[in-house]
Length: 212
Image 1: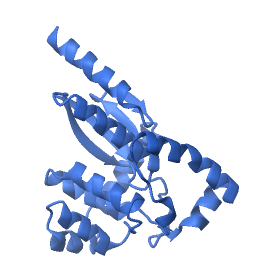
Image 2: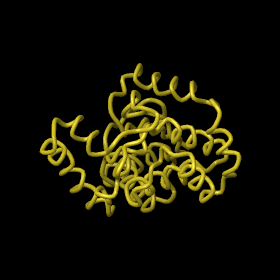
Image 3: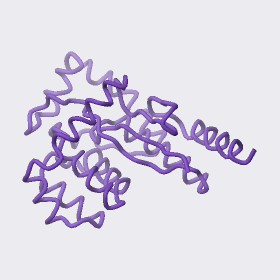
Image 4: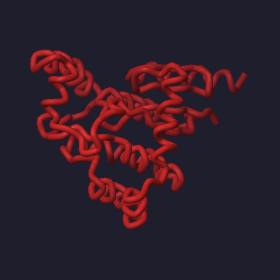
């Protein structure tokens, strides 16, 4: 097996698109060698704990309404290619994702990480839910087979806050500046939302190398 480490943020549209492309490739190559682990990278580590208004955030980040619209045009185009129906107008707030990353971390302990990541993306980009809220994260945990009462108790504590911040900082120290970033076998970094064809080529090369 080959470790595939994925650094992402559940409010990053390119991460959602990149995951969908990867999923498509893995479905076409069910004997792929990857074991997947998700790692925290916050797009907005300085975001207030309560988050902020989505429009205010986007216009501040991209220099006004026109800049925000221009920035999201390729997102919509690639989402369509990936078969994703994003409900961007339904997103009211941009959350702080520290707690979402804590949930992903705990899900990894229970072998539910990818299911939770998928549910977080869907909740945020399709259902317009605030994934910074503990109740929403509890619902997602429950839907993925985790004990929501335990998750809610953990979220109400400081459990693993500093670990997540430390792992985020470590990724930046490694040179990761944007997500998604995929690291294959602890050696080869693949940045960005790569199409299924690239992943199928990588899988084929690894399979051929292992057989030789």
